[in-house]
Length: 484
Image (cartoon, rainbow, N blue to C red; front, side):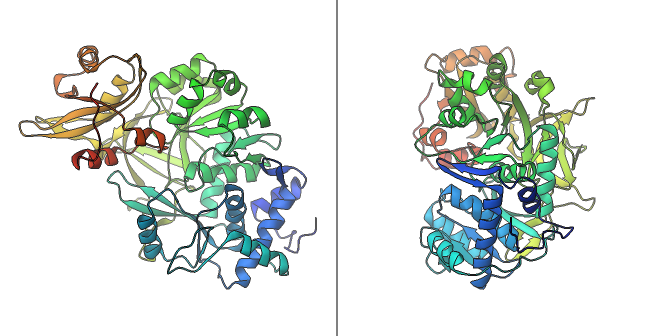
């Protein structure tokens, strides 16, 4: 390998270290295209040089828009190597919303195959061509404390926040994960989540530290076909993805052959976890957040049964306590630098350095975390506190119900009453039968007054179903309600 970067400098970028250690190992695979770690490093370095020659300065923000995933993977590494802040855009947002986001954030450059009026942009092929024609320059010294990425995250109220992470945050997140879920240079992790999602982005860092290959799924193939064809060893899934994979006749057989299935994104229905355990799948249930650069706690592979009760123990590099109010507070090496607001970085820690997650939970004597809900989801019905997640867990124990979201419905007498949106099988019980089963497990004020099927758009187009969106759309009358 001929790297013009000072390969002998002590403070090397982790990707360079891996490229030097495993130069011929596959780093990225997409169909017939394979980039070795040597290829990946040199291509990312070349693109970083091209961005520098376009006038992009270290510490400036580069938005990554409508791109092929294989190109975005290389660009993320290019931004990181060049000292730029990579900002993967959620292109599933409405055009008007993206326009407002870009106006507020003001990236220096947008790399995208779609145009964004009023913003400086370049298509990937043009950037790639220019980079090929230009000579290489030395990369800036690697500083792990500098900003590396910006990610969007939606709060429970539906507002979008912009979370800024350093290189150190992502690297420590990956190290802690790799100590719990072993990953080495002979393994492969399927990029089954988008890169604008922290669960997707974190896969690049885990693989980059260990020398594993990132498999990019092709649109023509299902995830199961990708896993089977490439012998994928690791995958990250949210509940809806796992449900769909297990519905496939070949799903349990293919998934059982993997080394690790990391589940997260939101609460995992107990029935789904039990189904995975019945098939002896290598599942790890996690609790995490964008602010903490992905996983905070995760179950151990040697104790899969614990996934039915909790989300595991705190991973290395993180700390967690429960406040007097029952709120989960976290801090550690993975905690983000802050929220970006009006070009300023807003600290997200309290005076003692803790990040208030807004989630409610408790730990047992073994230090394993159980998340019971969100503080701001709780509502009052007839003077009683109602925690929707408690109702949802009971609902999901009923055969035929895969998932449940409970929201408050305004009520003149009680202030609010719970109603439930359900994802169900064809043979699921009707609303009256569901209420009868719930009466032995819930007090009267927690019984939903109505049961509806999930809106199709919520199931088909979302990795993580939005409670607030259901509330907003229901109150606005924008959802066709189908009673059970």
